[in-house]
Length: 220
Length: 356
Ligand SMILES: Nc1ncnc2c1ncn2[C@@H]1O[C@H](COP(=O)(O)OP(=O)(O)O)[C@@H](O)[C@H]1O
Ligand SMILES: [Mg+2]
Image (tube, rainbow over all chains, first blue to last red; front, side, top):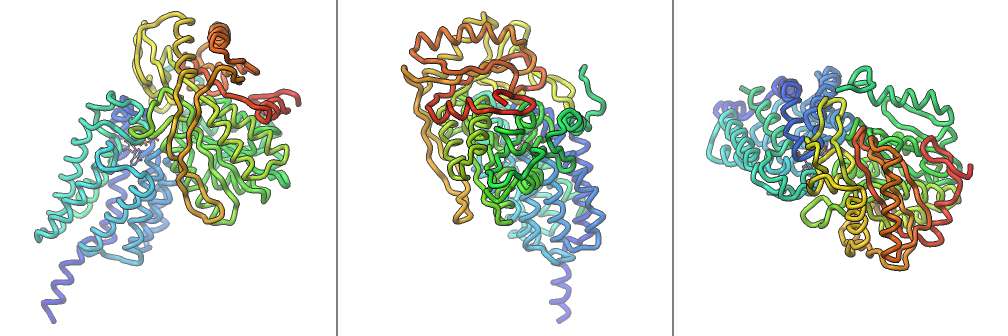
C-alpha cells in the first residue's frame, strides 16, 4: 500500500506552478530572442517571427493572471487562445493550436504525471501537423518538435526521471533545429526560395527549441 | 529608418484611425481591427471579405465600399490577421446571405482564415473561402506552399464585389471568384527592398545595380537576382513569363458548407492563348512613380499585341503595395462577358472609384 502511494507520488512530476512558470519563462525567452528569431526569418522569410512570438506571449502574460487559479488544461487553453488572437502569421495558428490541443489531455489536472506530460506535448504536435500539414524534413517547426518528443518518449521508456527526460527532449529539439539548416524548405514562406533556403536555420524550429528549453528550466 | 510613424506599435491602429476620420462612410473597428461598410450588413447581400497583413494599402481596407468589399481585416505589417478579427468582421457583415472569404495564398493567411471559417460555420453562418494564387514566379506547387496571391486579388475583389452587389448568391460568388483566379496571372519585381517598421531595417539587401525578380508582396526575396537593366527588357521578360506560363495544377482546400468539412479540390489554370482578351494591371510596389508604370505599360501593350492578346481594360497605379518598395508587378486576367460586365460596374471605395 505504502509503496504504491510513494510510486504514484513520484510519478506526479509537473505541478501547476511549474506550468505557469513555463509560460512566463517562454514569454521571457521570446522577448529576449525577438531580434534573433526575426533575423533568422529575414533570409528565408519576412523578418517577423521574433516580433510575432514576442507580441503573442506578451498577450499571454496579460491573460495569465485570469487563469492563475484554474487547472493546467485551462491555463494551456488560455495560452493558445491568446496566441491565436494576437500572433497572426503562420506561427499564430500553429502555436495557438499546439497549446489548445495540448490542453485537452490535461483538462482539470493540477499536477501531471510523466504520461500526462508526454500526452500533452504529443497532442500539441498532432495539432501543429493537422493545421499546417507539414511533413518531416519540410524545414518547419515540425522538424523541431518531432525529434524532441521522440527523445522524450525514449528517455521515459529507458526509465529516466522527468528532468533527465526533459533534458533529452531539449537536446532533441536542439538537434532538430540544427538539422533544419541543410534542408530545402517545402512549406511556408521559405519554400518560395527553393535552393536558396538551404543553409539557413528555420526560425520556427528555433522558437520550438526555446519553448521546450523554457519547460525544462521551469521544472528544474 | 525614416518613416512617418509615431510609435512602432501604433502604426496599424493609427492608420485605421486616420481611415475612420477620412471615410465616415466606413465603419472602422479597433480591437479587434476590422473595417466594414457603414451600411453593413446589407440585407440579402453576400458579404465579401478579405484581409491580410498591413503595408499593402490601399488593399484591402481601401477597397471596402459599394461594389467591392464588405469587410477587410488588416493584420500587423506583413503579418496575417488573426481569426478573431475575421470572425468579428464576418459576423458584422453577414446579412444571412453568407460570407465569402477571399484569401491570398500565404501559409499564415490560409491557416488563420481556415480557423475563422470554422468559427463562423460553428455559429451557423454560411461561409465559403476561395484561395487566390496567381504568382507565376512560383513554378511548382509540390515543393512549395503553392503560388502566392498577388495582383489578381485586386481584380477579384472588384469583380466579385460587383457580382455580390448585383445579387449573386454565395455559391455564385465563390464560383466567379474561382474562375477569375484561374484566369489571372501575375509577376512582380523589386528595385529596392522595404523596411517593416518593427524590424527597422530592409528585409533584404539589394545592391545598387541589382534587381530582384519574382518577388511576392512582403519584402521577401524572390526567385532570382540579376543586374539592373532597361524598363523594356524587364517588362518583356515578365510579360513573357506570364503569357507563356503553362497550365498550373494544384490541390486547394475549400470549405464544404453543407457537410461542415474541408475538402480538397484539384484545380487547373489554363494558359493564356492568342485571341484572348485581358485586363492588364500594372501595379507599383509603393515606391515606383506612376511615370515609370506608364513606361512599363507601353512595352506591355506592345508585347501583348505581338502575342495576339487584346487588352480590353487596364488598371495602372499603386493598388497592392509593399510599403515603400520600388518595383512593380504585372497582372493579366483573361476576361469574358460576365467578368467585363462586373469590372465595368460602379465601384465606390477609398481606393477604387468609377461610375458611382
Ligand atoms: N505548414 C507549416 N507547418 C508547420 N510549421 C510551419 C508551416 N509553415 C510555416 N511554419 C513555421 O512558421 C515559421 C514562420 O513563422 P512566422 O514568421 O511567424 O510566420 P510567417 O511565415 O507567416 O511570417 C517557419 O519558420 C516555420 O517553422
Ligand atoms: Mg515570418
